[in-house]
Amino acid sequence: MIETHPTLAQQAFIEKEKLHRRNVRVWRFMLLVLLLSVWELCARLGIINDFIFSSPSRVTICFLEMVKDKSIFMHIGVTVMETLVSFVLVVVCGFLIAVLLWSSRSISEVLEPYLVMLNSLPKSALAPILIVWLGNNIKTIIVASISVAVFGCIMTLHTGFSQTDPDKIKLIYSLGGNKKDVLLKVLLPGSVPLIISNMKVNIGLCLVGVIIGEFLAANKGLGYLIIYGSQVFKMDLVVMSIVILCIVSAILYQGISLLEKKIKF
Amino acid sequence: MKPKLEVSGLSYSYHSLEGETLALSNISFTADNGEFLAVVGPSGCGKSTLLSLLCGLLIPDEGDILIDGVPKSESGVNIGYMLQRDHLFEWRTIMGNAELGLEIQKKRNSSSREKLHNMLHTYGLGSFENARPSELSGGMRQRAALVRTLALEPDLLLLDEPFSALDYQTRLSVCDDISTIIKSTHKTAILITHDLSEAISVADRVIVLTKRPGRIKAVVPISFGSENIRPLDRRNMPEFSVYFNQVWKELQNHD
Picture 1 (cartoon, rainbow over the protein chains, first blue to last red):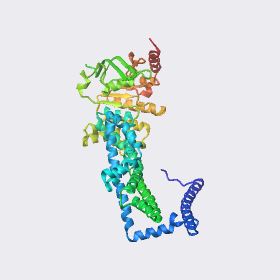
Picture 2 (cartoon, chains in turn orange, yellow):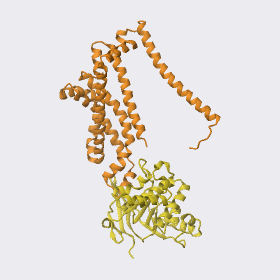
Picture 3 (tube, rainbow over the protein chains, first blue to last red):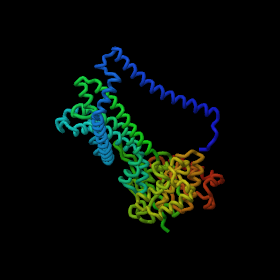
Picture 4 (cartoon, rainbow over the protein chains, first blue to last red):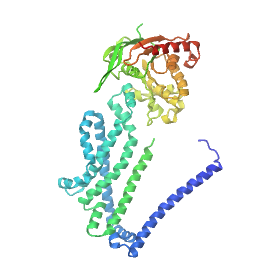
């Protein structure tokens, strides 16, 4: 780029753009403050029953108490750990199976209807069976989580692999390569953006699966806290867990985005 | 002297559930060492099929391909294939792309690297060795693709409309550029194109194919007196339009 002195019009444009961005940030924050204050106010004035609807202050108190006895960190840690374990397994298994399907036309055609069916099956329906089969423990949660994400992952990656430019494959063969070279030199490096965008979807789905699993088979974790809180009518606990879940999911997603920026060529 | 390439009685059909399509029928021709052939014909006449057969990506139904008098499958020669687009991989540097063939054939070493380095220099890509393909212009990309092909020291070069993806101006200069490089290395080359002027401006002989199934309609020898006239200069010579009309007539003539 050649350094030149920006013209007045350019300066004005940049000023305008900066102002716009600042406005967006301010309004985002204001909206949050507004919602929280309306909620708090309604609870204080008795417009809504704060025993049922909770309130920002009650949620904060509940949170601080759990911070004091450190139990909240254990619950967050368990949920995050379960999510990450199942996420890694989904990415690895999904990838390997997608490569297998790509390598053999017969295998992929035989398995296709099964994959389509399993992908559209509501995975929460499997949870009770998983409890019976695997027991009331972390295995059930991780398998439930994998089942939510893995089929979509396989299908997306397989579709991506099969859409590789046939001329690029021809190029490898014309240079004397074989199918392994196609896989290592074209498919894998060429699919990095696809794999990462797929990871973004999967991390969210894994969290969904973990929460489903924790609803049914857990005595730790944020999903457990939500179910437990609703059963004993401690709505503060439920709302707090949901808020934390929002933050956790946002952080996990941002983590993958960061990875994406690093890998970009 | 044996011709570099001898093709005799080549036929090939494509199969699908709807039926069988005869793409090429009874193709025979030869190419001498260092000769530049161009193959022209209407679209769908099996031009690209011919190159895939020569390269060994497809196995002919009938006919033989001899290189230096030996069947292609036994000769173990390297055949360089340039595709319509450069297909440089964005995740590799220009050097990495140029090395691709050597890497696949496990022939990469420090002397091959040195040679590629010199080659990139000669073809004006010296300062782009570590650049990504997206930083290069269309013509430079095509040159990098040529280096990738030449790195394997092919005995025979197959060019499948390698300039067709470029805009017209770039195309003229890249065609000039690439064909001059190929001629300077004295490689035998076969260029597939649908652009008659391109064919006449670079080739020593032009092979005209018929509509599907492709058969050889005519072989037109091209001569501009001297070997060393660049393609762009050939276009300005009076013989050019004579050859153009001759090839054009062959293409038009349905019988």
